[in-house]
Image (tube, rainbow, N blue to C red; front, side):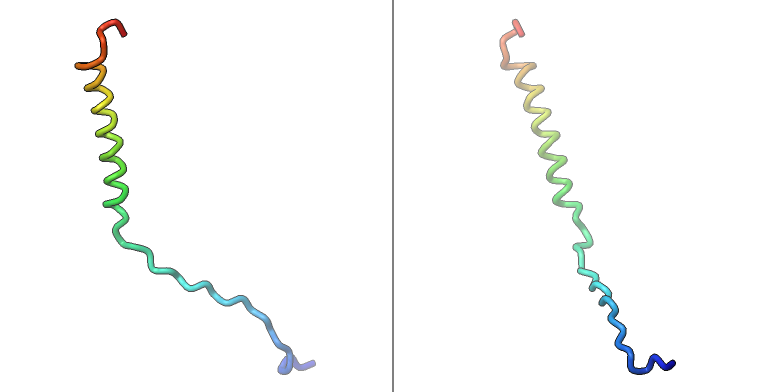
Length: 53
């Protein structure tokens, strides 16, 4: 039997999307914000908060 007239349905290969090469600055800003918040909380309890806490 010949398979010449049989249609074969195949999925298309997904196209690879171009991703940004340097996602670092955004992640860096998040880490910088976390460090700043921790530093501000420490400074509050070290210098401003009442000593009874």
